[in-house]
Image 1 (cartoon, rainbow, N blue to C red):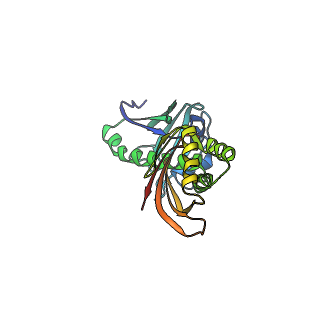
Image 2 (image 1 turned 90 degrees about the horizontal axis):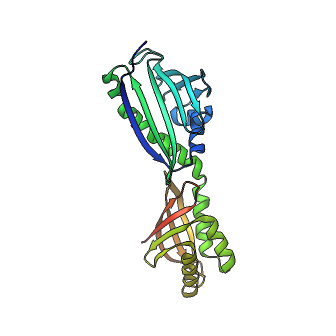
Image 3 (image 1 turned 30 degrees about the vertical axis):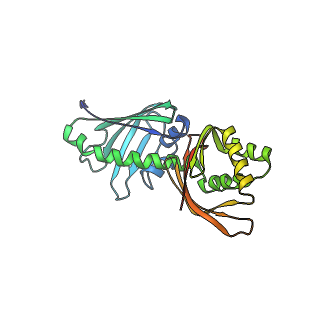
Length: 254
């Protein structure tokens, strides 16, 4: 039996709960979303693991252990037999809940230290893809979220605005821009009411697509007056929680 004495370790935090992250190791469609079209997994002990990389390289393996939503172990090797034969290495992935979502710990065991070293950048890259795919799925339509945020700022009804903000924002939300330095949903609700008092009729609308990367959203905006004429422009940076609510907003006026 081959001794797998050489280990590669990677750790990262993904902004999603373990149950959502683990689906990408059990659902064949989600598995292919971060490995490449044609990749698939039969998520049961003894089930087949198949990876087809975008450039055509193919890898195969077998599920050894499965403990949703915290642990999966599978063998890994290349169809070509080089640099690792089928069954010639073992991958262990462990998930644990943390404040920012899920900590993923990957351990890849090899028989040869030089082959292990060849895979360091590969896992760095692959897990970066993985983090983005999971975040894009979990956070959903960030454009709609940004639009709801801007619409909420124009809501003149106190109760309606408070209800909208409570649905959109984390309780400890932090807001910073040229006119804002507030924390908490209650404080922000009052701050928006004051903004409406001193800038009546001012509305915000999104400019262009909202861009999302692993829980951070960048969105341009235009402030328009009651006459629908521009009063200012800028960009907001939104930080989202694992459940998709706004944790912080930093606004930059142009």
